[in-house]
Structures are given as structure tokens and as C-alpha cells.
Length: 214
Length: 214
DNA sequence: TTTAAAGTCAACTATTTGTTGCTTTTAGTT
DNA sequence: AACTAAAAGCAACAAATAGTTGACTTTAAA
Image (tube, rainbow over all chains, first blue to last red; front, side, top):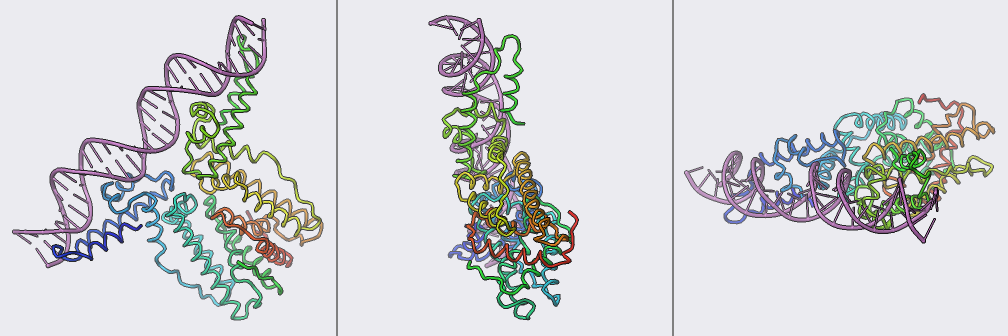
């Protein structure tokens, strides 16, 4: 699926007539440049209007070069998204669940304001190809797990009752924010974020919150 | 923008040599057939892969006929969405806010399971054209206002404190459900819906929930 | 200096959106 | 029943863009 991986693997294999791994410097430069250009174009025109020719031009590279590495536009975008989700975000450590959630959501809103991430968010909303959908799903599950850990820790510290469904609480404080960020690229004010957190945590604190099975 | 409206207006205008409104029966049949076919194709292949030729074939109509009424694919889809949002949904009247919200969300989940609405939801997520985006925004605002009214009524009945932000509460019980429905077409179980409602209402009941400005 | 991987260039195919001119059908009017 | 104008059908287009191919050039490592 990932043409870059394929190319690297082929280079590493190298038969008798091959002199080992080569051109890594040049290849790395091209890959980095194309992925960056894809992200920028994504931001400029969105997924549906992304033109491979324009990505090539912005990257200072020939269209053919892109097609030799990435078989389709979908794979190119999918790889671009992937490359930006490599870095694991650090778990917030503010001392309170409320502070941790606020840090998590503020970080998300900040990211959504950078041009690169706007492009990525655009692609995630407008996805229509299986490859891109797969990346979106992976990211979604990763973020959900991250939020669940955040809440679970707080339960273990005794900040919330044991009966609380950590995954559900994670959904509840993130969904209204994500919906506004992703659906129309709306800005989200800090007051709104805090209000969402307050209602969620007040609701979670009430004993007897039932578990759901999912 | 809406080519159908334009055509009807032209027919009604009618100069000396025109014999008034004509062919309404035929025109209506074609419009209905094309809009239905568009919804069905939307469900089958999604917005990005929608082919006007295939819509025409499914509608039993020539491609040219579609282009004469709807100038672009985006307008066709936009009109299709519009035509399915005409009917105002009745306000639930179960006697309690919890019941009303449950009815509202259950109805939404049920709609999302029909093939026609799956298509519409697909288009709403994958929108990339201004016309389609405009319809999506209109629908979003309408639903939000509907939910706000639902909560506001309950506040006036004394079910929730006056200080509660009705719009925020509406966002909070709907966003997690909509996110699952729209983002990946996931099914949403009744337990999950009830859990979301319980946490939201418990949180809202706590006095001193701050208002946000938005 | 040699060599093979990787990039460039230009020309190509295939698909799909949207257009145009002409012909045919249809439903209301006479 | 014949007439007429709107609207549908049909076939042949143009334009944009994804993706391909083969011949040639550049690059970095041995």
C-alpha cells in the first residue's frame, strides 16, 4: 500500500549488482517535500480539489515522481496524514482532571488553527477513499483511547467514582468540540470548552452512572 | 441557484405566445425521479463517486435533462438534500425532557439507518462544494435551534435550573451521537444514548453552570 | 569512475463533467 | 383532432484531470 515502504524495501534487498542502500538523502528530501506540499495544498483547496500536478509543482518535483512513489492520490493523502500522526502527544499532567482535559482540548483547538492541521482536518472530514478512511479511523481510535486513559487515571486517583465509564466521559467532553472544529472549521472559544468540561464532570460525578457496553 | 424554480418561474411568466403553465405533471415526475435517484446513488457510492450519468440512468432520464435543470453536480446534490429537509419534524411530547431527548435521538438513529438518509449523511460529511456546504450549514443550524427549544421548554417547566445554557446542553447530548453516526456510519446502541443523556442532564442539573457566549 | 536507483520530460489513455445543436415527445389550447 | 411551445432525448463535442509509459538525465555510494 505504502509505496515509500516498498521502494525502501527494494533498495535494502539489493542483489549482487546492487551496491546496498543508496540515495537515501535525496529520496528522503523528496518524500519530505512532497508530504509537506500535500499538507499545504490540502489546506489551500481541500481534499476533493487537490490536484496532483499542483502538489508536484509546490514540492518542486515532477508529477511522475509522485506517481512512482504513491500509486494514487488517496494513498498520497493517506501517507501525508500518517506522517503527521507519528509523534505521540504527551499526556497532560496538570494535577487535576479538569486541567488535563482543558489542556487536551486547548491543544486540539490550537492545532486546528495551524494551516497544516486545517488541511489535515479537511481531509479527515471529506474522506471518500478507503485508504484515507482507514487513517481517519485509526486516528479516531487512538484519540479515543488517549482520552479514556486520561479519565481512567483520574478515576484511579479518586477524582471520579469507580462506576464512571471513562470512554463515555471522553466522548462527551470531546465530541462537542470536535464537531465544531471538524464540521465547519468553526473556532471554539475557551468559555465554551470550559462549559462543556463543567457539565461533563458534574454529570460524571453523580454516582450510579450506568456502564454502557461498547 | 435552483434551476427548477427558475424553470417554473419562466413558465408562469408566459408571454402572448405562451399558453400558461404547462407540462407540470411531466416536469414534476422528472424532478422527483431524479432527486430520488440522486439520493439512492449517494447511498450506494457516496458523494465523491457520484456519477451524473448513473443518476440519469437510475432515474430513467437523459444526462442532458439533468444538466438542463441542475447546472452542476453540486447543485443537484444540494437540491436533493434540500428536498429531504422540507418536512418539519414534530417536537417530541413525552412529558419529560429525558423522554423528549431520547425520542429525538432515537429518531435520528433510525433515520440514519435508512438507505436514503445514509446517502444524505454521506453527502453531509463529504461535502466539498459551497452549495452542498451551505445546505449542511442550514441543516446544522436548524437542528441546533430545534434542540435548544427542546431544552428551553424544559427549563420553563422547571425541570432544569434557569441558569442552564439550553444550546450548550443541546450540543452535549447530540454531539457524541452525531459524531458516531456521521463520522463512520457507526451504529449507536440505545444504552449509549441513554448514558449520554443521563450524564448531560445530571451535569445540567447542578446549579451555577456558567453561560457561554456564542 | 562506474553503476543502478531515482528523477525528469513529453506524450499518451481513460474517465468524467459539462455543453451544444438538432430532433422528438408531451400536454394543454384551439 | 390538430396545433404549439416547453421540455426531454440523442449524439457528438470540449475541457479537466488521474494515472501510465518509455526514453533520457541526474545523483550518491562503492
